[in-house]
Amino acid sequence: MFQIREKDGAAGALEFYEKIWKREDRVKNMTTTLKDVFKIEDNDMNAIYKWFVIFNELIGTEGYTQLEQSKTFCRVRVPIGCAWKTDPKDISDWVLIFFNIVVKTINPKATVERPKGMCAGDSYCEYVYKIEE
Image 1 (cartoon, helix red, strand yellow):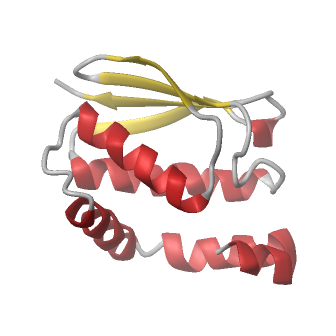
Image 2 (cartoon, helix red, strand yellow):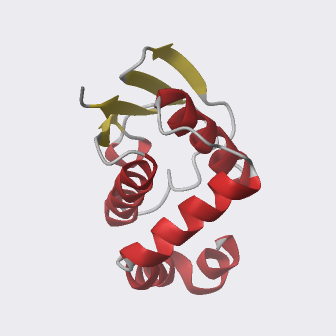
Image 3 (spheres, one colour):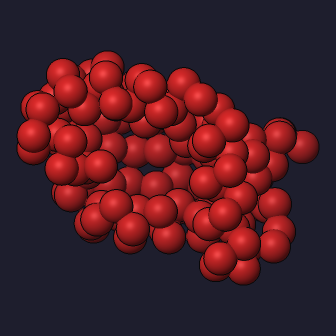
């Protein structure tokens, strides 16, 4: 994935993300595959956070910290090492769409928001995962 950015720049990476991440079925299949490979059997907030940790380790994101978690809520901060922090905001928007497909695949009542993002000039990214009761 990162070779595309190095070869074609941010615009090429955005084109790639649009082609792939618009295809919800592929994201769902990848989410299910990672759940199976890493034996994530539940659909609760622990499962969502475990998936987040595994995915971020696979793509090389560094320095993330879980700030708080309950049965229906999880807040995570990524202060450094965000794979998309230097790219255009559009790419980061696709990341949020991607993560929403992921969490809804794990639990249809789940959502994710990003109240802070390095792509928007913040000093860190912050993701808030929620599961409706």
